[in-house]
Image (cartoon, rainbow, N blue to C red; front, side):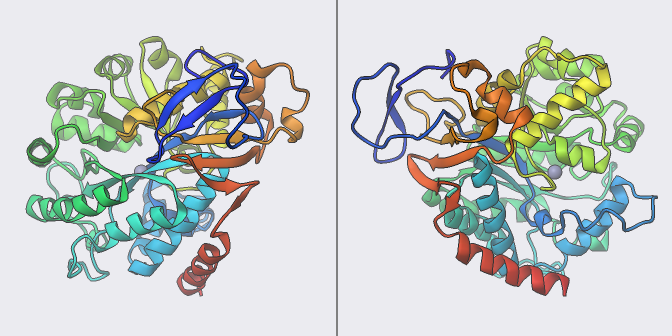
Length: 440
Ligand SMILES: [Zn+2]
């Protein structure tokens, strides 16, 4: 709970899945008994669901000369082959896997919009609706972030042929946003906007997309990739005359509704400025490690009051405990110290709370008014044995446990029971059929 661990907690939930009361040391015993230590569900604040279909399949493609950019070519190859049914099947399986590990919501940074030849679908929101369908089938909470992808590089460089499924101008993007809005509302999902990056959306288009947001709902979350690789920083300096985050905080109204994804390569003054803006940084440690991106400066950022959440991005990792373990160990390895200013438990609490802020939904904290997204840990897991020392339960889960999650509730509904999703078999069959088709 916000004040720390409590015992015999009674959580009351209304018919819509919102917590209405939460009482420690409760003598009342009626209702559903939660069978282990309970923590708030973790929001996953950065996902490209379709990339799960090639996780682990891009590790030896270029004989030792791999870079972020050669990886991206392999990723585009998959992006250009998937059909609407595949998008839905892959996302549904991914979301079930995320739920099983303790992620109770996902912010889907969705950028494949058009048919394989680049023409929009008759329904421009076809693939976005498939993401909504997958979230519904799995039961995960959703923040849907349709992406504006306009150019291939800084300086409004025309898109490349292999980016044809991603590209929209501002009118096309407005149509997409308006087509998705009623469906998102009906599904209880939060809609946000996602200018892809300063590479793909120049200053003029960034202003344009923020104007669209102001007209529709100025409280919508804004997510963008920033400063993931050093080449991007060099190009920003050459074209914009400033480092990416330096440029962003000087030219855009960055506040707590913004989420800066990666933000790995920052000068110290940028780390300070980003912390001061109130924005949430989305760290994706397993993907950043897999791609060799670099390591975020958490101690400096945290000391400056900066906020962060975690995402699984390309989905080589799909477990919040693994992401937080990487988060910790990257920092410890770089600084050759055992403490980085926060315990794994503190990191969990901070990333759940601030991940909720970045998701634009009332999640990540167990308190009245928030969604009843609950993760019940398995009291029989060897890493959690011994009882007593509650303070270290989350530390033990993160550094010493694998598959410690027993039950998962989203909006008060049991989605995972004793490790099993209610529709696991159907979702797996559809996923296997898609994978067979994609990789045969
Ligand atoms: Zn990403």
